[in-house]
Amino acid sequence: MANHGPEETLALREQFDTVEQQKDASTLGMWIFLITEIMFFGGMFLAYTIYRSSYPGIFAISSSSLNVYIGAANTVVLLCSSFTMVLAVRSAQLGRQKAIIFNLILTLILGFIFLGVKAYEWNEKFVEHHVPGPGFHFVGIAQQGPSQLFFSLYFAMTGLHALHMVVGVGILTWLIVKARQGTFTAEYMTPVDVAGLYWHFVDIIWIFLFPLLYLIDRHLK
Amino acid sequence: MSEHIDSVKTYALVFAGLIFATIATTAVAFVDLGAFSVVAALVIAVCKMLLVALFFMHVRHSSKLTRLVLLGALMWLGILILMTLADFSTRGLIGVPGR
Image (cartoon, rainbow over all chains, first blue to last red; front, side, top):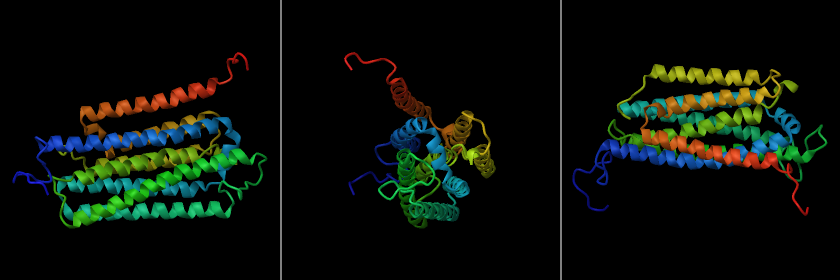
């Protein structure tokens, strides 16, 4: 460690004037990162928009093969995890050690449930031959190409989202370890706060993915 | 930011709102609204996003700089979407000389 003043703490490192300033800098930094993520996912949503507008009928039929109830249930699981995450952040703001750990563990469990359900859904796609590639076959439509496009977007978007969830699970695990060591106090809880921002962001991405992938013209079926 | 600690009740209400919106968006997808089904789905999704961002992500308590940066981000996303769609939807409207 570099030499630093004796008054330096986690809550106030020497390059900052005040605790508030350090906290604002961390929050802003996280938001800037999340904005790059918005642009990154934005490109995929844009590709989706263009191909859905080009092949609306086939996208609707392909979408109908996804299980809407599993999708909705998984949305609820993810929203629950956001709720427990915000409670973890609140516990950290109040400096309640046990509540931080309890809520982080709940969030982690809900994250694992979401990923488990996702894995089950992907496996179903393999069984049904709905994975883009040489083995792809969607029964009942003449144009297999645009349907493959839908499933390519489905796998790319939910896959990327799940990858973010896996990263989030890693961050949560690290937070739980740190919280057990008593790192977080009411004065210093920036990692919990910033991880919360990340987790909620991943939730927001799913909030858009669910209606766009699962809920296209369900009334047709 | 740490001065503003929302109550559990506030978060619970937001959470209830999010669950309600999830049920609503699922239910409305089974109703034939024609071209408006996409609009309905997106309006509900944007409402849910606002609930999560404003309450869970503390945007309503965040600094002016953070809000400005967020507005800037939405503007950039708007440019990405509008410019690309403007290009895509107007292709072939005007003939290219020599082709």
